Image 1 (spheres, rainbow over the protein chains, first blue to last red):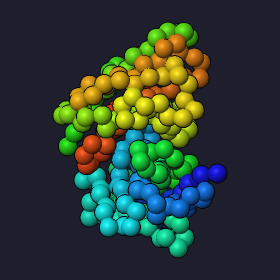
Image 2 (cartoon, chains in turn cyan, orange):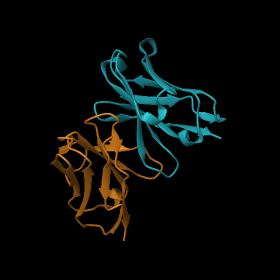
Image 3 (spheres, rainbow over the protein chains, first blue to last red):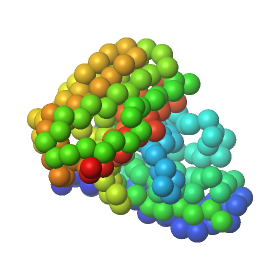
Image 4 (cartoon, helix red, strand yellow):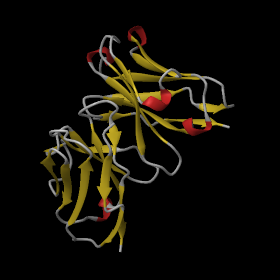
Length: 114
Length: 107
């Protein structure tokens, strides 16, 4: 079964850091582009970042550029999102998603900045 | 950045109704558009990709059309399990952008 499982969310103070992890099973993550998408409480979906198969291409939404870093860990078949200088507006459920075009989603991990 | 708008933002409908949701892009995106369904407390689910291709396993009452700047998602006969929020997404250029969503509610 193809599956994505996020971890690493939690409560953090403004200015703090968190590292989210997304573990894949049922497929090899470095064969695919991968993405992080977030959803603030009661709000819509927001694309956050993409990474390509070998990690040579990374793209970010403007609001997280310079603060968030997407990366992959091939040995662990996983993807990471290092989030620094967190702000209240980063509070959201963060989903790990397989591309092309979001065909597999994780269950999400909740990040609260307060 | 490409702005995505959806109309209506919400609608009250009945079982069996035909539902049409429109998504407009602020500039042309060819057919690089997907539609997602999200039920409360649940993970989004992809319904349509490349503007009109039905995801495997999605009922055929769902269909997508359009290209360029205007797209539609149609549910031919609304079923109880279709009450949800629907989002479009453009993946033509970065930053990828979602529409604000259309909430389909029971009348």
